[in-house]
Amino acid sequence: MLTLSACDLLKGKNDDCDATNYAVTEEPIIYLNLKLGTLISGPDAEHIITRTYKTIFSGTIMKVYCSGKESGRYAYDKVFYPAGMPQSTLYGGFFLEQPYQYKFQNDLDYVIVIGHLKMYFSDGKIYEDMEELTQKYFFTDIRYSLSGMGYYVEVNYPTVEHWVEVSY
Image (cartoon, rainbow, N blue to C red; front, side, top):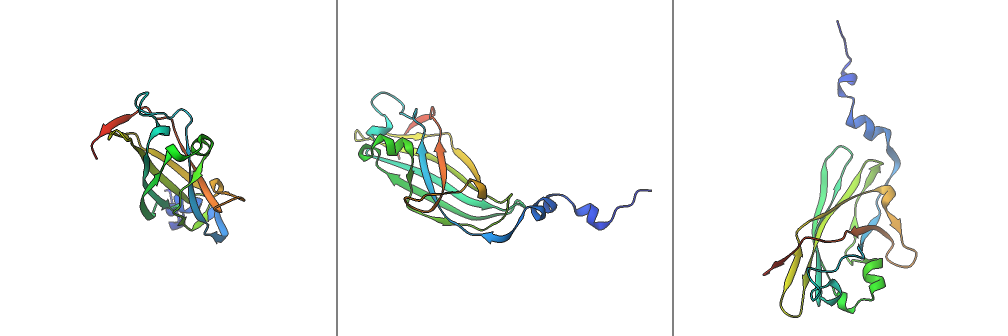
């Protein structure tokens, strides 16, 4: 006969959460620092990211607790203007203006950023990246900028090969 206590039956994910709890809950105000891959160009030689009059980085950000519970989902549409930006800023990283605040109670809580780019050109053409970026950030991935916005996560946008012309 095999006997188990009620505690043995409930061990699992919550034990991992309890084992990594912080003594004090951390609540940083986090900015997104968008860093475009240096190989991002565009769908053709005429339509490259440095020639857009407007680019939109849109998607969602949300918190996922260690238990798997999702919370604080926010949609964003961040507009920036690559033609007016130095390439060192465009490819080296720049802060998006909207901050987000989440509680981190243990090592296994994280924030997830999902997004994609849409480029607008002066000839009226619009191209959208059809492959979404998805990145997780644990508390230990949050950085602090001494020269600017405070706490941030670095959103590394990969090289894009999935540009599709859209009409909206």
